[in-house]
Amino acid sequence: MLIGISPYISPELLTALHRMGHGDEIVLSDAFYPGDTFSQRVIRADGIGIPDLLNGILRLINIDDFVDDPVIMMEAVPGDSLDPEVEKTYRAEIDRRWPATPPIRRIERYAFYERARQAYAVVVTGQRVKYGNIILKKGVVPVSE
Image (cartoon, rainbow, N blue to C red; front, side, top):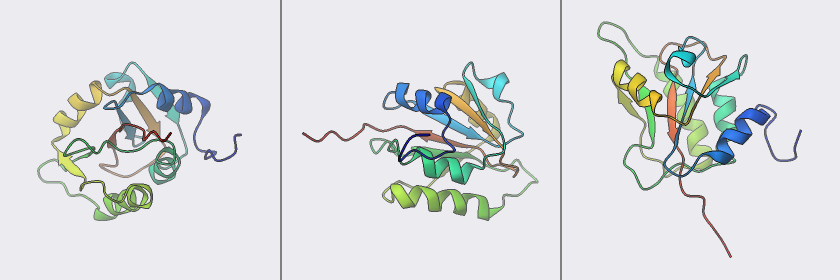
């Protein structure tokens, strides 16, 4: 373990976060997400919930503030519904570190999958809720001299 780094952040995830450039995206997926179908770089975080990962990740990277929609989630398919508590819980973790982040944008299921194909990595978590997937766009790390 390292001081100041969440125990939920595996060495593999820490490496991915470090290697991501600004503008790169990372998908935190629920346990049902077909990660290996949509990504060449899949990181397993079985048994870990997305809120815990968000808390750990957002201590290490910032969210891109040069784009309108740096955080994306999947919208419900027609005839289905969302549990508003899922987004509310994720938003609370985002606001804890980066409160100026724009509202989470929802996009259609297949548009989400297509966007996820372009992501730097997919982290398959133990989150077991419908529509629990979220994409984060990494920002430029502030530099102080």
